[in-house]
Length: 459
Image (cartoon, rainbow, N blue to C red; front, side, top):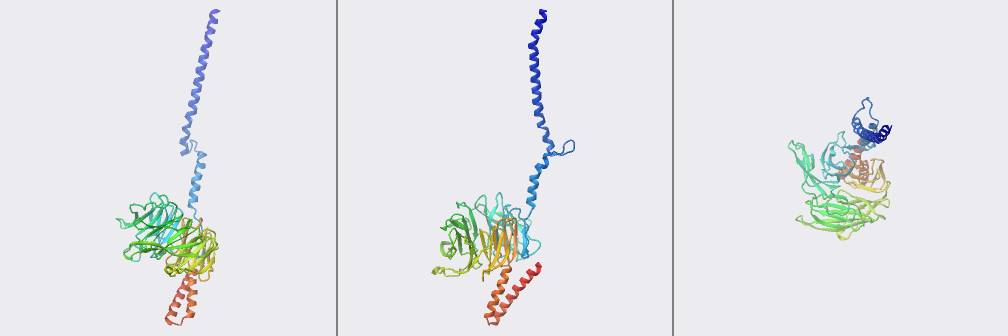
């Protein structure tokens, strides 16, 4: 009995040891069991399960991507009887427009890292051809076509000329880059960036750039009070302090002589950029000012010959000015007309090349007025899905173009044709010269035929 008791007493610790070992083995097995399945479910995410049913997580993960694709494919729908075309080529919002000085091409830049050159000859057609230039590792916010150098793309058609170069303002690099056209081995053309961007000089965001029609200088304006005048090679020729607290808009006049800006103050300041007879830069001098608004000016525009200007202000009015004055003799511009704005702020204004019509854009709407009486002629509502970023007439005054999303809308300028008829008929009543009367009657007839063709085609 003592032997049995001794045996039972020695067996108890052994059983405890065995029990502890068993628990450890079970815990280790549980850990291994938990960790192993984490690797196996990864594979079925890319395909169906063994029983043929797809994992429930797959549709939920695909929905955001599918929704993004659907949103990307959606295009803002706009229709109007005066809409000539909607140029669709960019895959992101268009930020800037510019017509070549010969009127044959329209340039557009977009957040999709491309600049496109559209043929204005195709605007009224079904197909809209364009040349594309890629902006590497950045995108252009502003684009301006070079006015002084052009090349024939199709040698057999001498009239088909495109700009040989253009400049862009890069959004990320915050500088100007020049692109020039080069001919490839297969005979086609492409645009390549020249070596070396302009140096960074502005301390605030740039709001606009421009090239003088003479090709002698480039302008950049920032949102502080700075305007820089550059040589085409990227050297700063002059710096202008506008003293307006901030610049809202600035541009180069179509004649290439003036630079103007507006901002917080209720006026527009205009400077003349002077060059010597040998072409060397001399100085920038104050030319004249447009004074008459009661609040800050948001935008302005020149006529093609720079003899007229239009301005739009926070005071809810737009004004039409005679700037054909002897400013060197201290003669001030004349206010010809004041009209009321019918669009939301902030506003952008465009004056037709012949100064007969004014277009004012605000929000997603555009209203067109005549400059003879200031009357509203046309109203285009909800033109783009986003706020209108740019607005311009082509060099002939036949079309008005705008951008605010991925499409570029092109409108007939019917107000311009009606203005020609009204103006020529008024002159016709006062003239007795036969040759003059015949010329006026011809202009009236051409304008009426253009209107008949526009409205006849739309009905």
